Length: 228
Image: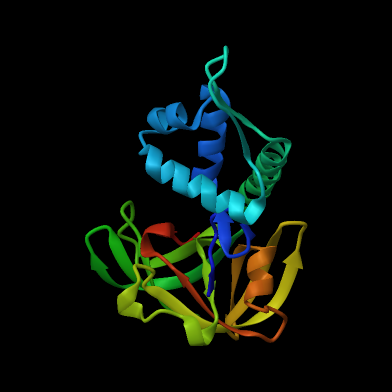
């Protein structure tokens, strides 16, 4: 189990994400699931299967009308509109928090490979994008929404994921909101990573101060710039 940064709502192991919200909005605009699938470039069968899975977990989302003088069609239920409202509120909270929350580590470049640099920091070595600088003394910025948290027993092997930056740590504090939490993870005596996750992920991972976790993030989501 891992806690990622993409906004989603969860019910009965089914996650409602941005692609699902896009499908419901297309149904609302097009008036039918068939036309919505065409507008999004998706197959009708896949769209129908996905909608069925969502409705099994979340309840009726699309009311269908067959034939008749109006030619039939589909419309969103009140439950679907409420779901979209909650999802947009969650995504706005993610976006607003992610724009201001990041971890900055100072370090020294020890290797370069094209646009990527390996930087020695107090937390350990970090791979980061460094396309605009040849400086050796740099600071590495890590966005909270780029950090994924894993339970130690469930963390994938380094070679099995593109998130090559991985650090074992301990949860220092959790700043819980209505839908989103900022989790602060001590990965070294002098380094704390901030991660942005949903409250459902906090519950699924059973996170609390003192919990052991593995934090990971991609090199492409991390930037090194000359140290100020």
